[in-house]
Image (cartoon, rainbow, N blue to C red; front, side):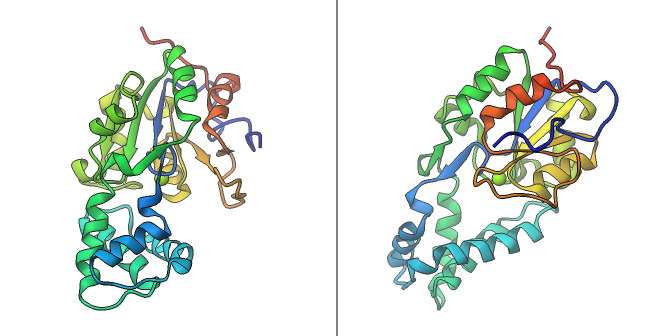
Length: 254
Ligand SMILES: [Mg+2]
């Protein structure tokens, strides 16, 4: 699916792209079996809980809406524990053991070994890096991002990585975007945020003057996306999208 619109951002004359920031979960990486239906069943089983794996997808959808609505303030462990708790409960778990199980799931979410890298990440980052593009990560998780960069061999491309658990605020709070810009030495007007959450990644970034590229890996249409927000299905579209956009000329690092 080609980019829906040619320009990743609101029209603004001769803006160029000198920096690209990526969300992490479901943009660069996705959870493996540990966090799928059977994985939840195993977590639950260790705590003496019974859950119905068939209810997993609907449970995650319900919990995700709740989590997304709660984003944007200070990072709080409890928000993510509540996500796991909600998934377990939607799958049928009940009783006091749900709490401990949810906390274990939260802790394990930080472990890189449970995750896989999308196969378009290295080609896209390599291509962007070859143009001198500066790149960073902005993530709402408590995962140790330096460890993630090492685990997935992304360190050569990424100049800064800001997690909300370290920084204190979660996307779409403007401070976490500003901190990432500061660390990379980039201006908002020359920066693009790439992520799978319209509310947290794209609208948050646009609020401080960055542009946004929404990643829709499932191909889901996003008619609610503002005009000027490019919607891509794979990161392989990104280098060409930025390079071919008159407003988005990559600047070679000096
Ligand atoms: Mg994400």
